[in-house]
Length: 489
Image (cartoon, rainbow, N blue to C red):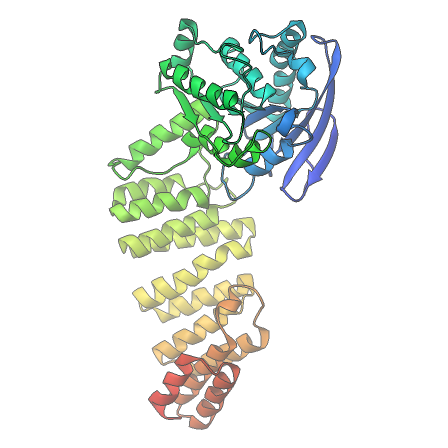
C-alpha cells in the first residue's frame, strides 16, 4: 500500500487486511486542558482531491478497545459498496469525558467542555486534515448510546446520523427523552438519520426505552427525518453491535444507493434528482465506476430506451476515472446486445481501446479488442480482414495468445487462410498463458481447430492426428466427438 501524505503529522500504520490506513493522533485540548487521543481509519485510495463522509465513535463498551477497526472494516470493504468514509475512534471518549447523567439526561461540566472540544477542536481537525464532508455520523452502545441521545436532543447538527445500540435507561423517566418544538422545526429542514437497535436478550427496561423512542420520534417530519427501529432477538447487550452494525450502516447510507424504482418512467430525471440528493446529504458526488454503471445500464436495457441510453453513455465516459476503459466497454456491449446498434457499439469499443492505450493498461483493452473483432467485424459485418487486423493489433499490444486462437477460429469459420490459422494455433498451444483471456480457450479445442484446418486443406492424415490429440487432451470434449462423427475420422 502507498503511504498517504497527511496535512498533520502522526503515526501511520497500514492494514493490508482491510486495504485502509490507520493513523494514531494526540492533541492537547484547550477546552478540556487535557490530551485527547484518537485513531483515524482512512479508506483505500484516500486522497486530498475527494471528499468523504465521517463516522465517529467513543471508545467505550462494545465499541471500545480498538473497535473502530470493526466499523472501518464494514464501511470501507469492497462487498458492501458504501461511500468511502473516514472513521474516527475517540480513544479518550470514556465515561469521565462524556460526563453524562442517566438521572437528568444532561451532561456535567467536563461533558460540556468535551462537547466544545468536539465542536471547535476535533471535528475541525478531521475536516481539514482528511477532507471530510458535513455528513457526520455518531455510533454509540449502552452509556455512549444514551450520550448520543443527549447530542441528538441538545446539539442538533453536531451529527446528522446516529446508530444507537441498546441505549441505557434506569427507570421510567431516567433519562428523559422529549422532543420540543425547536427540535421539530430543526429536523424538518435538516436531513437526519436515526437507527436504533435493541437486543432481544437485553433487560426489559432497555428494550422498552427503544420502543419509547420509536413512539416519541414520530412527531418528526418523515420527509427529512429518517428513522428505523430494528430489534435483534438473538442478540445480547454486549454483542448487539456485531449483529446490527452492518444494518445500521446500510440505513444511514440508504440514500446513497442507486436502485431504480420499477415504476420510474424518467430515469434520467430520477438520476439527476438522486445524485443531487447524494450531494446535498452526504456531500459527495456519485461514484462513476462499473459497479454503479452496470445496474443502471441493465435497467435501461430492460426498458429499451435508447435516448436514456445515450444520456448515460455520455455520463459514464469519464477520462478521469481509472475504470473508464471498462465503463466504455460496458456501454458498447449494451448498445450491441440490447439495442442492436452496432455502430454505437463499435464507437465505444474503439474508445475503450484508445483510453486503455492512453493509460498503458493492456488488461483494460482486452474485452474491447476481442469483442470488436469477433462480434462486430466478423459476426455482424462479415469483415474478416478487419477482424484479423483487430486481433493482430490486440496481440501486438497485450501479448495475449488468446488472440491467436480467435484468429484461427475465424479461419475455420470462414474456411480460408488455413496456413495462418495453423500457425496461430501452434503459437497458442506453445505459449498459452495461465491467466485469462488465454485460459478461456483450452488446448483440446486448439487441437480440434487444427484438425479442422487440415481437414479443409484436404489433409486427412493431419486432421485425424490432431483430432486424436484433442481427445487425448480431453476425452470428454463433446465438440471433438461431434466433429469425429461428422467427418468420420
